[in-house]
Image 1 (cartoon, rainbow, N blue to C red):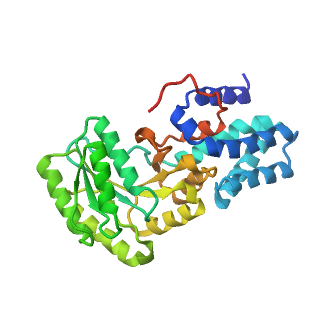
Image 2: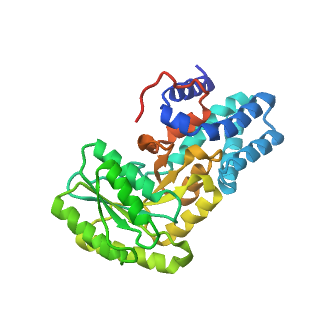
Image 3: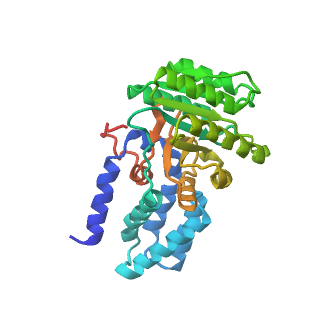
Length: 332
């Protein structure tokens, strides 16, 4: 069996296993991106400079990012030369595999660092409006479905309504929220939350924080203070610092990631609202340029639409046809 036939069969089997969460959540990106890619690969009869230029434009249009696209195109050129590929159809599965490799990155695990015993502390950072509070609420629900006891800390004491918004989520998912009055010191809220988590013996503490990027210096100092309080009370915590980004903002999300990633000890990323954008390629750009693992993705409005990120699911959902995987009920 030829290399290309094996690779195509491998891609097809993986595409069939794509869960409906990823397939449906990435429908807008798939319709915009894959339609153009499929058209290019079927319309062009040979792989030449014009072919690569058009593929480059499509990838940049999907917000994959200029730097990432240039590297990807260089790798594809090398594969064409190395394997003496002439037919565009033989390059498509290689493109798919290259995208998976980009998303997987090096050795960082996309799994959340959940402690086998004791309290797991997860801190959420990110600018206002990206979906931090919603992510926290959905993750609390997810942990509860796994049989874990959860507590939430309302550390965004500056944004009007942030505390109340978290409390609404707490009521929805049946999780208590540790809070103080608006304008209180966020680090003091975290201290109270950690003490409550210890006293109650909970499994997971999820901590919200403010996201006032216009006061970046103050914000970073505030986060440092929160870190010190948590680390003093629970050595080794926080076990995750997750930067929440709104995928619909495209390159702005990449800039936010660079700003936060510099100083705030981010260990992983959460990409929200992927179902609302045709430019889901931003996930690839952020993953590649920041070398941070994507841990969770928001693929819809429902409670269980917050999913653990899976590079193969992501890419094969993009390349899956409308019917691909419809018989698969292997939802996470």
